[in-house]
Image (cartoon, rainbow, N blue to C red; front, top):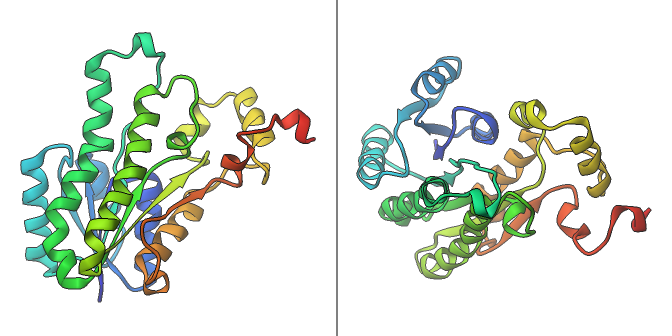
Amino acid sequence: MKTALITGAARGIGLSTTDILNGQGWHVIMVDRAETKLFDEALSRSQVTPLCYDISQPQQVDTMIAEALSVRGQIDALVNNAGVADFGHIEDTTFARWRKVMETNLDGVFLCTQAAIPALKASRGSIVNIASISGLRASTLRVAYGTSKAAVIHLTQQQAVELGEYGIRVNSVAPGPVRTKLAMAVHTQDIIDAYHDAIPLNRYGSEAEIGQVIAFLCSEQASFVTGQNISVDGGFESTGIGLPSLRA
């Protein structure tokens, strides 16, 4: 049985990807720093191992990988999904807020990948980094978040180039607007309508739709795919050069 390690696995896209890979016969090591939520979700699932760690902390990352290997003996796929969002104007974004975003969204991807390389060499495994459409198209209030995700996309290419000689594939997924509980709680009807107008498929995506693409990239079906960023966004990236009213 293959083993995937997913960070930020206690909710959202990480949890959905856990369920999809479980259904495909994978054992999933679920990593999250929200201990209660993590263990609650793990209790209701089979073939999972919950590990509570903060992937922004180098020492914790090393310990996490060591524990994962002690439990399972191998890592066949690493999904760097953990992330934080902080939306605010540039002039209101303090350096502390900037660093809080970067240390999880970017530093965490770097640290987890680096720590997992020996195991992934042995398995000739796969890495999937979760970026965002905000890393491809600039928007207001996303100076830290969008910049971190743009860096993840470039880091993915750097990793793919260097790790390809070991047979390790590295790709990123850039979700567009996703219908999560959090998004629906904070998006007004005006915001929802605006997104629908700007997305050619005229709707939000689902966590499962993102998870299916992640699972594909982890699988042997993507055996010759590396260094790529796949936007799972209903066509949202493609509309950056035209106003919805003109397209209509």
